[in-house]
Amino acid sequence: MKNRKPEQSIAKPYIVSIDMGSPKRGAFGWCDNRDREGNDVDKLLTLLLKENYFAMGIEAPLFIPVRPDALKDFTNGRDFDSNHSWSAGPGACVTSINLGFLGSFLTRIHQEKPDVAITTDIETWKGRKDNCILIWESFISGKSGASRKENGHLDDAGKALHLFEAEDFQKLSPEAYLNLPLAIAKEIGMKTLPSGMLVVKGEK
Image 1 (cartoon, one colour):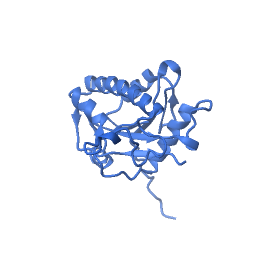
Image 2 (image 1 turned 45 degrees about the vertical axis):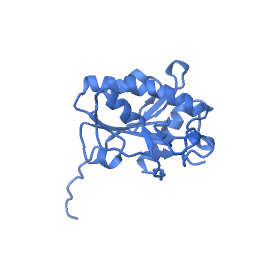
Image 3 (image 1 turned 90 degrees about the vertical axis):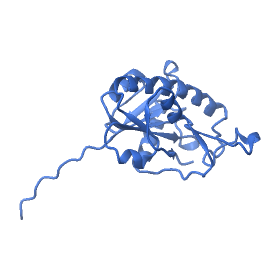
Image 4 (image 1 turned 135 degrees about the vertical axis):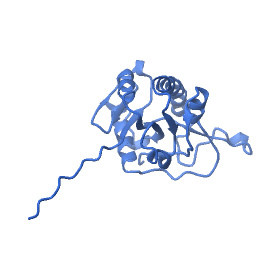
């Protein structure tokens, strides 16, 4: 048998998934693709500040529909929301919480790493390889959700992570959306890149 050269290990990009909620109420959980998880938002920030290139999923509506020709429908769910509209109680609550998180988090990243840019388009992110953050939305609810179980926030974050790794992305309608991560990034002066929308959703 011929001697074979050992295969070189290829480092996988860092991926983290967040189940969004209030840290003070124990409703915030995260996990990553390096077998780490927790509820401590400061620990998560410390880990992410060590990275220049990563993908971060957030279980909160990131893409808000814009319907100037059907104003009465502006609170209607998106095509993939099913019976859990982005504007309903839980969705509206976590959207507000996430605005505070993203504003604070991206500001800190920009202060520490001013060359890092943000995108919500996976192909743009894959083409960069450095100094780029991909932000994607996760939607774990119904029978697939685990928020009422012990460690449910960690479970939901883990489910979303696995969906992202499998590239099990939602097909989205062509209607216009307000891209919240990009809007916040532009407001704080962070670099932005061409972006689309990226959503993973747990099975019902």
